[in-house]
Image 1 (cartoon, rainbow, N blue to C red):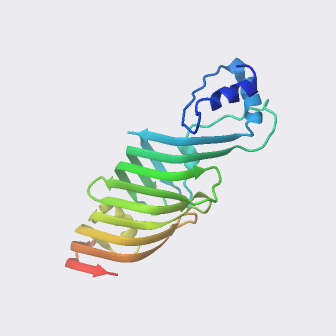
Image 2: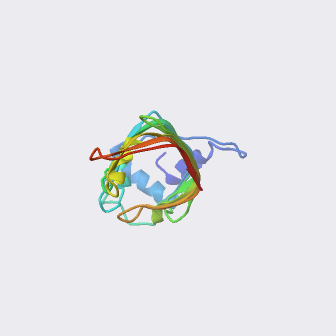
Image 3: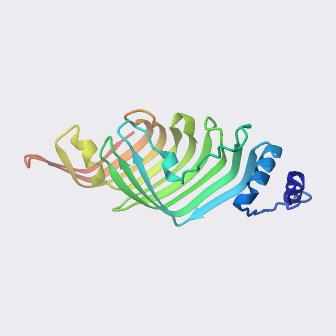
Length: 239
């Protein structure tokens, strides 16, 4: 309908007497002015019950300054200069879920790279207010061996995360660049298992991570990069 009032009224009819509904609207460029009027009448508020995505792939890079360009993960939106200024959009999504994703991760500051597989995530009450913590549950596998599961909250405005997690898998050779900064040792083999609480902040040049819990390592072997040292541990634990 050409009338914003009629449009919003008909959209509202998709959910009667407390029932839920979904409405999809298609438009052409010549209908842009109708969209502008609808946005004004709706006070630029958008509420979605659930958003789901399956079987995708992402590439996430943390640059040398400690920043992750999340905006680069979505297509750019060109501003409409002809649109009259108005209140900012307020968006909320009741649930965001993704399953079966692959994520390529690279940290340019540490040199660590990883390929994450079978990534699944469920987040509740996601909104445009970046200061509001978002509750999540997530899990993944690391190519080459390893699994991780976690549940907690993330605060986008602070680039901070807090939650409980569990890790199990082979000691990753991709962590070698970090180890090599401190000691001349190479991870040859080993199995790592950890379970505890993590508080992390990623806004600086280096991630700030605090861990409280238990970590165990078995069959660990460290080789000296110069060939003059060989260390082996059958089992070890820390808490």
